[in-house]
Length: 178
Length: 304
Image (cartoon, rainbow over all chains, first blue to last red; front, side, top):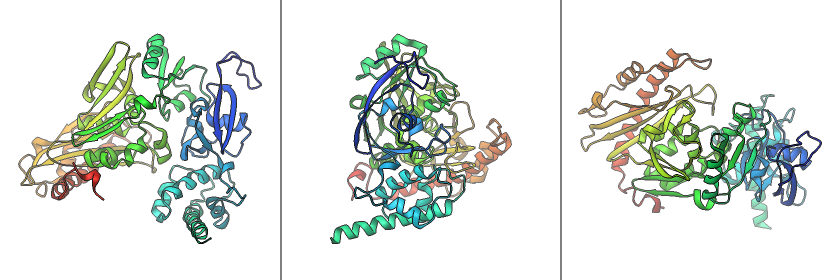
């Protein structure tokens, strides 16, 4: 533990060095203990793909994957993420650079308008189709029930969930045939 | 919307956590899932000087034990894990029935069930379930360990009887005895919101499908969870002969819920009546179906 000054006006408060893995990369960052995971990702690690909306767990824009499971990064302290795996929207693309099934589905189905809520939807849906590769429309709606889209493009987002699952199945079949 | 400053403690053992809590008394607060505490701090409704993060205590606090008699969970069992546990669902179905209504799946991935109990929100589902089942919370401090019955645990809205130096290390949800069935539902403005009104029901029937007992507890109605005992109203009748709408009236006439911008007191009374009518019937049907299932719950976990 150290107490240092930094540009965000957090002098005189407790700082800690935190080690975590972000999108597969080991990262080490020193930050004030009260910094939330979403602020740490954006301010300290420069990963601005994670969006911060309501900051109290309602809107879902900041959703990231913690050890593969969707969590609100605004409701988690960065120091609590020590030794955990965090996946942000930047980490969703396939290793070969191809868009992930969920990302491709949003392109195919016009699943975004202004795009602010999109990172939270992408992470949430990516985890969901892993757990449920063949969702019904009702299950797709339930899966995105915790994410708000103020453009109200929900019909296309629900279509994107179903399409994402479809692309994932297609790619799995291709992989199996190859 | 940023939390105020605090000192952060990340103990590696429960004993160490208890020492920190004892040292800082009313200035200390336990951080588990943080799905209520972090927003409360961000809105500056709470500003503990010392935050004791128990998330690294997985060896001691992640236990999930299930037998025919009930479900015991450690303080780090997340809602989602308990919700998905098939053995827990077989032993105490009400737990999973209610967990599906706790916020959204993403919140349930991080939030802990014991933390929800300690938070003691009158609009929360799990305190109601603990009270209805007659469960208990296990609290530990440097002074020792004690078991607190649900009836004593909740003392006011957002207030449990836990001392400043105490950590809720576990909770126990007992299965109802006999030929029982349970049901849970709630009515919200929007999916995943706090309930305007919710209800859980436990019905126990005898071999002739007559009520042995019928109990109900409500969400967002009382300051602390209260169990309404309808047994005397239905005793000796079969579930098919009971006028479930009349049970709704019985409950409506015995509650005095608060009104707020989401729902007036009268509307809440109406919702409680509607939920009672639906759920007392559902619970009785579940009791009949459960009794007619050929395999007992002892082997339910091992079935294909």
